[in-house]
Image (cartoon, rainbow, N blue to C red):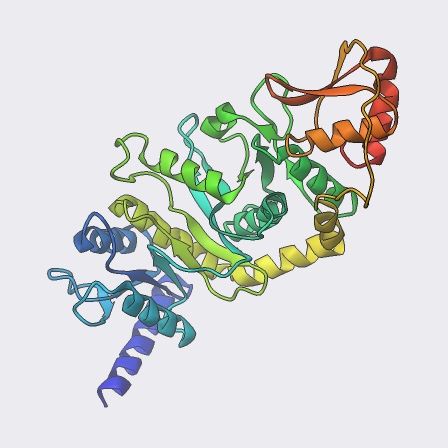
Length: 385
C-alpha cells in the first residue's frame, strides 16, 4: 500500500507541475556520495538546481544526508559504496523513475563519450568540449571525427540549430579537418567557426578557447578532460570546481541513457548547472538526436571516411628510397603531425625530395620551389591535403 501511495503522490505532483509550467517536470538523479567536498556539497548543489531551474526535480541517490529531508531520496545502505549507489541509479533509469542522472563516475562502454560545457572567460559565452570522458573510438583521430558529430547533436539538444565547429590544434587536427570536410562535401552539414587569430580558419588555438570562438570545440578525450579541469577551477587554484556545467552528458551509437559526469572536486554551482544541463538535453530527447545526427553522417559516408583514416601499412617487401637531397626553399602546410612522415615518404615514392619540419603553427614539409606544384598534387591524390 505504501508503494501505491508513493506512486499516486508522484503522479499528482507531476500533474500539478505540468499545470503550473506547461511542460512536464524533469526528474534527474544525483549520486549523493563520492565527492571530495563531502555529501553536503552534493545536496547543496541539488537545492540550488531546484531553486534556479523551474520544472527540475532532483532525486538524490545514496545514503540520506542529514538536514536535507526537503529533497527527494532513493536511499541505499548507510555506506559510501559507489557500486551500490550506481546500481540504484541504473535501476531508477531502467524503471524510468528518473529522466537522466548526474554521476561522479561511470564505466561507459567503448563508443560512448561525454560532451562537456564550459564558460569561456574572454566573452562569458558557453562552449561545448567534445569530448571529456569515455571514448567514442579506440582510434584517436576517428574518435575526434565522431566527437564532432556527437558534439553537434548535444548543441542541437540545447537549441543551437546550426552550431559552429572548430578543431583544437592538437595531434590529428588536420586529419580530422580533412575528414569532416569530406563529409561536408558529401552532404553532411558542418558549419565551421573561425579562429579569432589573424589567419582565421577552423583550427583553434588557446586564444580561441578563451574567447569562445565556436560553439563546439573538437578534441581528443584526454585533452578535453584537462580543459574541463582548467576552465572549471582556474579561479580557485584547482581544489574546487566553481564554473561551467561539468563534463557533460553521455552520447554514442545506440546509447539510450542521459548520464552526465561531474568531478569529485565539482562544487555546488557546477553540480547545479550539471543537473540543469542534463534536464535540458533529456527534455530534447538527446539519445534520439544523437542517432539522427549519426545517421546523417553515415549517409555522407562516415564509415568510409573513418576507414580511410587508418594508417596504411607498406606492402610486403616494399622499400622506399630517399631521392638525392636538394635545397628546400618552400613549405607545404596543412598535414597532420601524425601523418607527416608518411606524407614525406609518399613524395619520395614519386621521386620528389622532401623533408619534414615543425613550424610555429604545426608541422610542415620542406620542398624545392620547382617541385611545389607537383608535390601538392601528389599529396592531394594520396589524401594528405
